Image (cartoon, rainbow, N blue to C red):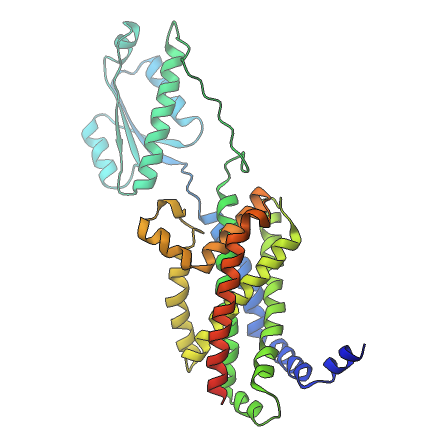
Length: 374
């Protein structure tokens, strides 16, 4: 009890109260902690979607038979492809694809029905706009799969395959892309908010001259810095709950792991973000410099984190370079706890990496801050 009373009567508690009152009076800062994270999660969760649908399909049907119409129906019934135009020849079809009015084109030859009736291979021509390589690859896969399934339905004596794999999708049975992107975006939003808010808070005191006034008080440098870190940590942890709530309610992202472990490792990553922010504040003199420098630092962190593009698709050099990225480890932690329900027995390498990043970043930034104060 005496220790608690001593703490509430100490200079540190007075400085913490000063920081809390200063944060609450700053309406822009409170808005920055609540509004942008929500909007960013919603935008990224809905917009970042590798699945393709509503692709514009052009059709040249020289056969004009029941079978050709059924094949077109098979391609368009699931709305992956939308029958946009029926054209008279493949030259016009190629021109429409070139102008970007169509994503894919299908040419059905005149002998289509005759070849099918004689059990011959009926070839069709497919044109795909390959400018967007990802969409082109997925669209081609869909076309080949749908046409192969349609041809098996037409076969009079279908032969059962020698190997029939039964595929089970673990942890994301519906293959919802938002379940992959939203946990990654939680880490991205937390990185942006923690680094920006902490750096702007310190730099704004430089600009207003409040920092010089604090130096005239009997408070030690560590007390001044700790009084800044504690309220920021509490408020940014509120963003963790906010992001988790949006992910659960809007996107239905499951939570299969240990909640206490999730909070503990999220708090560790918040310290990493605050360390980055204080480091930026010691390198920059104005708020404008902080904003520009933070983009220079945060964008590579996001790109190499695996939050948007999988680590496995990166060149070998960037795969190893991403190990020096704290956001990569936090994204792996969030996805592991939320989607797979794994614990510290599996996540301990990522947890140790975050702990090392937090210790190094906070130590360096605190030493730079203390040297500037002195």
